[in-house]
Image: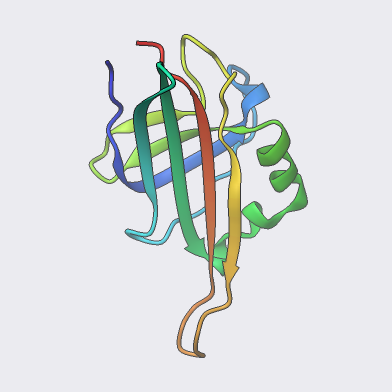
Length: 138
């Protein structure tokens, strides 16, 4: 079984799953230090291997305008996205695309939350959670 490295996320570039392999514009938002994570969970359910990818991204509200655009939300909900992720240890992984399945299991929005902060001294943030689940080809 091949495992991807997991952990803290330094940088992420997102683009529509149906544009993989073409020179297309991607969405990149400056992330809050130590606020974003990537998890890959492998399990066996009803006798089949299942893999779940969860990419949790956190940014200052002032930097997250691209995530809040209706076009991005629609794309990440309907078409799905592929993420090029740079982890805190400088390793890079692609999530939502595989050589075996292509873009059949892209990431989709699980949630998009805007936190207005609890006090005037705090800064508003946006948290975007993208997930995909599919078969694990062992």
